[in-house]
Image 1 (cartoon, chains in turn red, brown):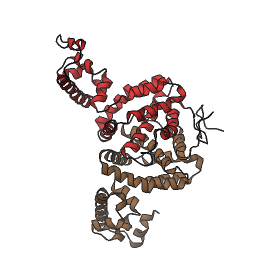
Image 2: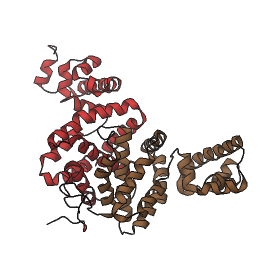
Image 3: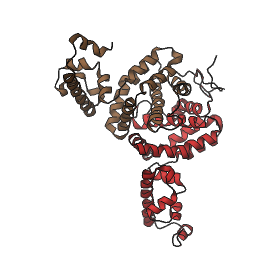
Image 4: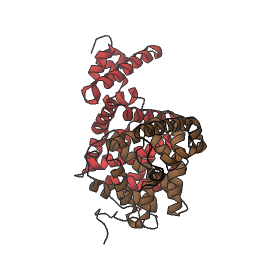
Length: 214
Length: 214
């Protein structure tokens, strides 16, 4: 950490224009580093080097590598946090809570655009697919598996992702009706039990009458 | 004998080179027509006109508009037929049968490339999304809804598509492990009940022990 930049962190925010400039430079460098070397090989330190700034400055703007990645890729939310928050609640509500959190985070058009853009790139370029895979595996799927504490936790995590990703593609990408217009509550009733099943295998509200059990 | 081969047999095969040329010209014209005007507005007749061939010749090579569309878009199978075949079996096996059929049709790398390419294009271009939406709605979702004969059939059809599309994206596109390497039987056990639930709402083999009920 260089002597002239360390105090900035302690003494308060950098001036707006200067901050925007530095933050933007770090994001640009991060996007290039991730695209060139993949998720695993990049560190806050290597991004700092590429951006020509002190590592402490990267820490000043970005909490960790996952945040640097999601922001530099245009993802305006943290899938890892979303899943973590859902898993922290009651076990029988995990599916519904995860779905509510995912739909809420996709409420803003910018968030949808970011997710769909990332998916599209990953489907078209082997390296982008590898990058997304590394991020998902390290920051989301492994953690979910750990928190689930089930022997097949990683398969469960990827299957959960498959239902969520497909929902995003059909609802926000292809915009197939009536799915695109379906209310959050309707989706929680329909897809919540599926996420629950993938994650924990509870039958939960899946009974022939499709009503929650007493 | 497939229906598209019937006239060919009666009239005798065109010479290979000539046939390939004409068929290719029709496919190119179809791709352009669909991309310009959408799925609904195009007919075998309008494609014949654009290709400068007789409409009977289009019928000679392609059974119907859905086949012309899937072939010109590089989709080497018919999603509508796949769903139709699965729905024709016993109701309690619909989810498992649909999944088996979908996985079998994606067995060839060319099929995966076609599906992933179409998805990617649809995610990047509003018109491509509209084209895919029109095809899915007309040829797949409406028909599934009709065959299900349930008041919420169209929502069920789109939710079913969401799980299938997400599975394709994670397994073949992003290739997230262990999902990418999971066996067909493993997937039938995990995802079959989900398709069943989306389509018909049966709880079927979803019980706390994750074993089929007696």
